[in-house]
Image 1 (cartoon, rainbow, N blue to C red):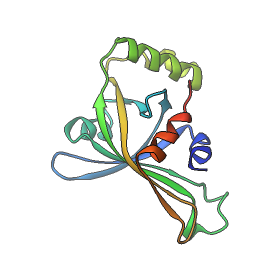
Image 2: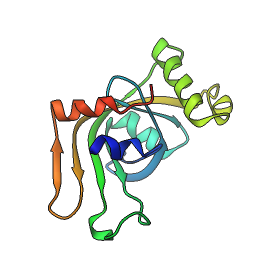
Image 3: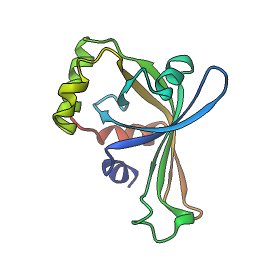
Image 4: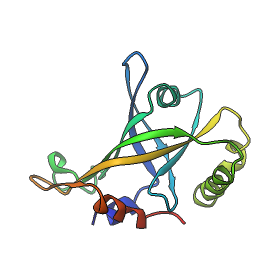
Length: 154
């Protein structure tokens, strides 16, 4: 069920923190491949990019829309505690992920892909919690977390 919920999203919400401990909430479009990680392509001009490079821990969240929720106090959500790592520009993995971004998000990637200030960040989950509603929180670790690997763009 958590995998089906995740499949309905094209962007993620993220919480990062600066080296000085200043928090930042933001979002980014993402893609996934077969390694259970989320990939985001972020401009160095964005606060969250500097935060991820300085403090490579991130919390990401997928949250049911208010319009689709019967009870705003019990919206479905899937949250991850994760590590972030900078991808190597022009590596085979970078090229694979950029091609996937182009397939998923279209022509905008022709503009973004060559921009040197954009950095590919790999977000690797450590653990997750899927919340279906009141008193329905399910930690996902180990094999359960690995099952989400089946939900990807490739």
